[in-house]
Length: 306
Image 1 (cartoon, rainbow, N blue to C red):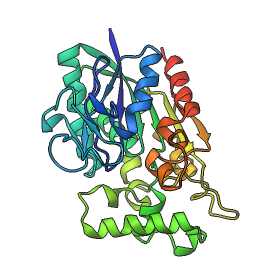
Image 2 (spheres, helix red, strand yellow):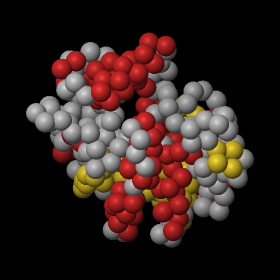
Image 3 (tube, helix red, strand yellow):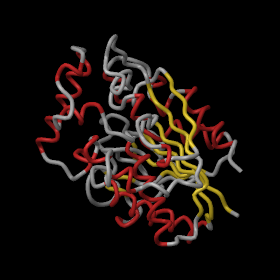
Image 4 (cartoon, rainbow, N blue to C red):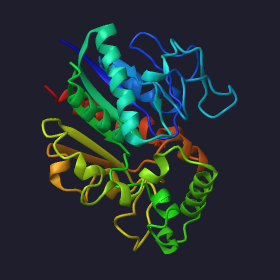
């Protein structure tokens, strides 16, 4: 039986396909989300693949070498049908990720996967698990770890779509600036993901989370939330948060147990990503997927699976 860890990056990410043996030849070996996480899990003896993602339609293209977290010299550029559109619909991303897992099966003989999803990558992975079950793809999902995943929506996009009032930002400069930035980008055009990062889309009778009940019944899930940003007397559903996702949402605290019956959780004083860390002048190690404590928590969860 061949087991693999599949790392899925989140919304608006550009991530190369990498294998246990090969990463990018220049820049960050697996992009700005996955590089440290991939390296850590490889060091723990796991067979790690990063799923390809492009922030738009098409295949993964090398970003500008001067851009934040750039990479170049990809080991291989996979075809579009195996590449997640990280700005698009969650369920479409799940279909693309499921096809990628099917490729791992046919090419490398993978029969079991542990998904590790950062941010929306956790939702993409959940959608992929459902698609794999429906299509009877011969790969068993052994576990799922979600890091800063908006199980119940993201803080700035919920504000951008009018779900929460200005007062919920608690007058904090970063929260206000970041939320406005997301709102401006939505106004420029959206391929589907932004409006799905809302409470209205994800939570409630017949909505995305409830429709997914049953998918994770036999799958252990480890949820990790970030708590870098805090606000005295802030709404506990929104504060603390990692800059994008509240602890409440990342830990699925308001969802029925049936959505993820076999769940464990952890929380750390980290930001959502190295991009957020960089914006506030903090070291990359304060970013969710580069933080040693978060990486150790993922590794411990994986080691506990049989």
